[in-house]
Length: 212
Image (cartoon, rainbow, N blue to C red; front, top):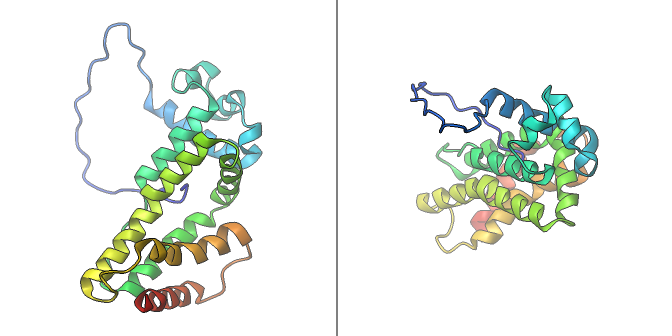
């Protein structure tokens, strides 16, 4: 969830600025982005339970009013942030083979999951999700729209190439693809992955999917 922060390069397009309605407050985008960045840092530093609008505002270098003009509470702020990251998603691999696609997916996901900030935020939000149904729903949506959607594409492409069965159990396939790395990086949170681990995991997962 918090694993799909990617940079999209492309030709910039000039967008026509819409005139704000009379009396409407104009929200500066640079302030909004500063607040979002501050939320990531504050979550990593103190966790969701201890996070406050005051702390976010202080870290972003803005007043509390600037935060409240955009979000009603820290819950709505975090829900919006999780949803935004999910929409950005992960790049869809297209190497021409199941094992190649899996290896690329694992490399990108591993870098995201093992980022120091993500490594602190994800477990904390998971713990909050067990107590807060709104956060749980946002996390599930982020997972569906993020890594699971990319993994589904990998499975569909492999089936189209004839590498795996057309009638494969997609849910089981997604568990096989996502489970091992997530367990290693987020649950166990062990030391740096040994050399060749991701390549071996991609090879083993591809073999398992072909056996289904």
